[in-house]
Image (cartoon, rainbow, N blue to C red):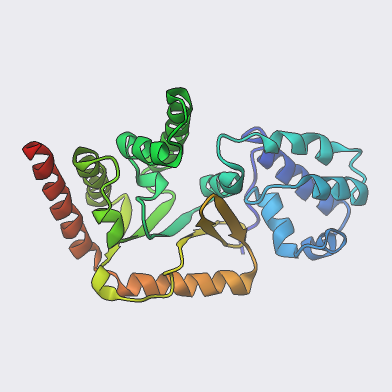
Length: 280
């Protein structure tokens, strides 16, 4: 079995804390499970902290300083992890996304953030914040487009998205914006950069009716599931819970159109929007 991934402590505060935590734990002769006991967390959670896929909280940092005799190192450096361009409920998921080798997402209402165009993202954020200044909207859009740069790598992460048909039919930003947004998704699929399926209305009821689901797997840490609601979001790392959501995603994907049929539908709807815009 290959050893754990070597973290680059200079890459981010989270990587710094993870590398130092692993070093101090091994120096103390503790397993991940043993270190998890005084923190009331699982050994897999300690592994996720070391791998940088989970954010260290202030109370955890203080306890680690105590258990590992770290002289306040973790508490001092944990402050840097509070800085994020993203809302609190999504910040940890966005940071984990950067380290994921595979991302699978079911999107019930909106094109996933990693696949959004500037025009689409702007329309969505304006809908979220109807009274915000243009400067605030500009910052939100810039952060989303920066996040989408994950796909600039030709192979990693592998992104597989299942879009509910409602995503295609909901005219966010108008016909021209929707045409461009769906053409962008189709282009990524044609380039074999992403796998996209459409779950048609005809599929009826399914296991993910209650909301959005994102699954993330990592080369050196247990997988995570992220569930998002209205202004809320939560990462799940319990193995049994994550397995349940993996089954949910698999069944949703099994009910969706094939990637080829999905691409054809996306392009057809994009053409309809483009034709509608020309008629205006």
